[in-house]
Image 1 (cartoon, one colour):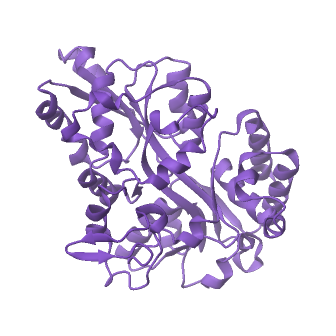
Image 2: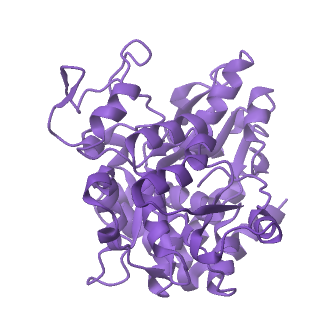
Length: 414
């Protein structure tokens, strides 16, 4: 999940034990990002599970704020979480290290099978994470939320035309007015596309290869851009960006689309208009997904929980609550999702979302909608022309230390 917040680990498990709660075989331990689920959806699982299986289960829900911290609990601590929601590069790393078990979908009764609600676009992108050609990633993980990286900006101070390129970070008119997300992988993954834009245009390299293969020369190129951008950067933000933008202290913020939507809505309540743009050189398209770690103790309940989260109604509730975009959009969910999201009055300009909802017309309330011309929030669903310029972020592997060294050097530079 891309909205980094300070989380408080739940103490539910300890409290349940102290109060004589259910034994571990009837508990479901979930590890998810903070503020990344609708409370009613979460609280409704136990009753739904009993209705489907006739068995009681107690949900023990914990949160985290950093991918690597959560992964350490599983990889090093061997903690027995049944369900975990990491980002794409962590899923890739867990696949490499055999820390995820296949999802046994046959544990789910046919009448309540919702896994197929996930958009084929997500399944296709997830397959790019495979460490070996014989591994089908969709056998191990199910998409939850996704989005892009771009600029949140305040139109009162910034012209949209000035943000059509990542070169905006070098523009002296934005001196001390740019907030940079404190996330070295994400910043590297977009600026490397800007650094090699000419080579991309000439067909000498493609975006996927640039983002996947981290080399000293590419790291140096991004470092030089960031060093030149230092005068424009007023802060390295974790979760205070929307406040600084609303107050006008910062004019633009390199951020994730989900944070952008959240900031836009929060600012609007205070009478401040914000907007979001993905520069022309391209960006990264990121995903978070559900996995069942190898140390899970309640695989059956874990499988049902993931299936439950794939219900279109739950996907919509979670989207409305957290401001991120659900991976639900397959044939069995498209009509339900679009009935809620497609709104010509609110979004008069159309976006081509055929990459996500498919090429065929979609029947919604008796009307056939053309997936190439949908009236959707463009922050939620970027146009196909933008997605075609986006690359998936990958596990940095042995190059992680090189990226960290670069990042620390940039932040300490004067």
